[in-house]
Picture: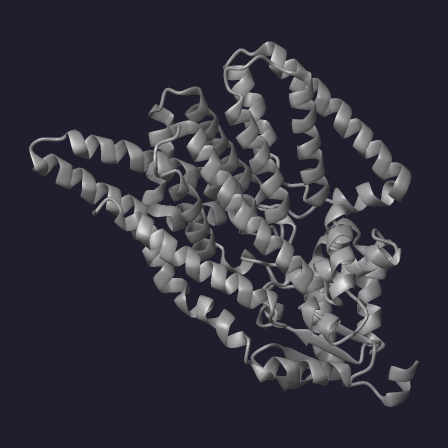
Length: 481
């Protein structure tokens, strides 16, 4: 009965997360700053526009193209790219939970309890990363394809290397990479597993096909988009080792006792468990390294959540079997307390701290203040900038400036800063929406020079819970010019 408490808790929390998915898909409210950004580029892709424009446009698209065509096609049918992307991402999240359960089932056989991995994943992901639950963002849909690839490898452990199998595996990963390009933990983990298993034939097939597939894909992308795609996707970001350390430390603190899953996997002797252990280590290292890039978010740690969820399901079976064999019951009681602490403490602490945020999703469905802000933005003509692009997208405004990538562009192309400063000095924009982070010198959207110019030539006219709105302080004749 006590061993089943984590499962009951995870199922209950998963039901809450599924409810938030349904609510988000039907609500026009900005929950994640990436949503409007992805929606605009989907509109560009579906209308045949330039997906990778020059930096002089004050916009940077540093994502591969496939997600934009997918959401743009479905969004054109439903007349809303954001809600279309949310529906796809929400479905992908649920399917990810299913695939994670299937991986656990492959490892533990047909014993009961494999469902626990999927329930744990939905609960952990929903509590640790609520901003990304059903967000119009390509990370989870791309990760779904990579998770399927891991499942296929786990399923074929011990079987001879097959060219058709690894061909389909590589194709699956290439499609995932065309949706989001920073999901490298799965292919790296598979390669490392093949090296440690001394399966040189499988490694050579997998490595050879990967090189061919990447080369052909890059050639096709160059033929379709030219060098602008590679210049945009590979534009260097400012990097900070201290930021990487802080963000990684925060993630480790967030997982807390759930980290006990990693040494548990390390002591498992089966080949299938070894794949998941390698995947967990590589996923954590991937997150630690990538999180030092400017504006890189916690999505680089998602693969680690997959592994923790699978490991929890395996640990549950092992501990229940151990407890059933123990006499006297004192030892079993101590082990049970340890298991409940590992499985429940961090998720329950996260539930306590995120409860207000999760509740905000349901309150947003009836929040009329958001519609008031959209009406205000519409009333200010087409020369509007939104730090939260979803506001401008739903207000029907064009994508004039991408404040979320502006500092990345300026770090690589310093001349862009002077060009944008001149636009601000000339009061070229009728309204600028900013969030509370606009004064942040490290993580905010503006450099010191741009921020000083804004203060000198604009004044704040309106403040709501959703944004701060700045209008020109210049003369009307200068605005018209």
